[in-house]
Image 1 (spheres, helix red, strand yellow):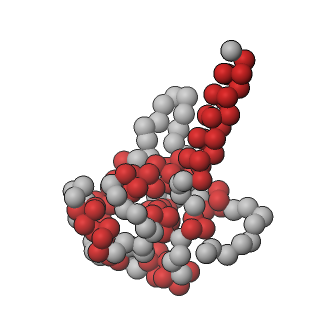
Image 2 (cartoon, rainbow, N blue to C red; image 1 turned 135 degrees about the horizontal axis):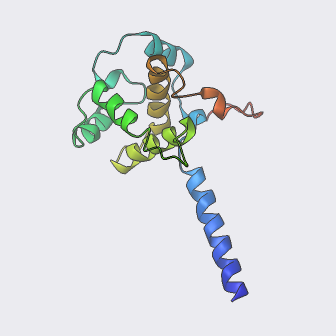
Length: 145
């Protein structure tokens, strides 16, 4: 029995580590700083392809899920901010993770981290505190590949 519990624990830890590796990481965004700055400072047009990381294939996947403009994409992002309970509030890290997994779940296979970063950073301008890029800072200065 003890061995079984140990192997289950190791299996659970392996799954947890695997899930952690498969999720939002702002360092995986290949969008240039200039492109991201332009996105953050320009008015929202409604055109999904204005969002860094969204191309024609992603537009099709989003449309299949009744998201046909950037306003609806922001709406979906904001819906994932909860639900909060008395014991747990969805913080910005969990929120970004939930949005990344939503994109993955609808079949968006590339640039998910770029999309999450773009929407999160733009939303932070509308709703201060909804996203904090500093939550992802660490001492590792490696460049994105």
